[in-house]
Image (tube, rainbow, N blue to C red):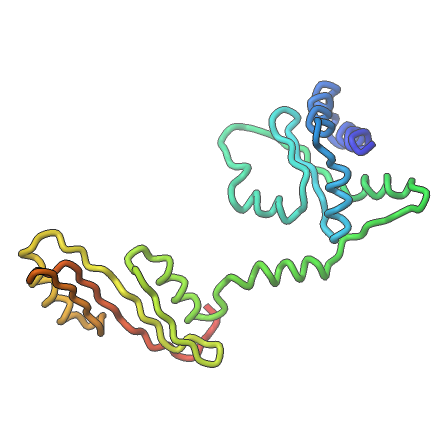
Length: 213
């Protein structure tokens, strides 16, 4: 039933050919697929469902949040010319549900989107300290990042960096350079059999009261 309504909508709005709709049918009613059930389930949570297709290679029926991620992550990128049909599925599903012995109408829920938006924003940095901490963690140069937190705010950060030692003759110079550096307050030297085998240095950054980045 859903396929018939989708086909009618695509034919009416986009002039889809019989051949194009035959291909679409193979996607929608293939074994193991239950797009109507999926749409009802997602709509019961408050989602808006869309269908995207080019009638030849691409068929996607999913929530608007998934489409947002798809576009953000470059899921439809490419230089080749291509056109898509994009329709909202909610009215079609509700049309079917309205024909039941006990009619049902599933509405989208703005409060649900507010909750999803809040959850998605949570992992982001809320202030300059958190932003700096994330930056240090993501930098490949640092092997360890330590944070001191007071009353829910970062007050100090310490980043430890390994210093590569290529040749024995470089080691004493590297140690002296590290000692003279103003960027680092802690220097760790590991020695084995009288030879320096590992050298690392750490700096501590005092943090001021946070501001939004």
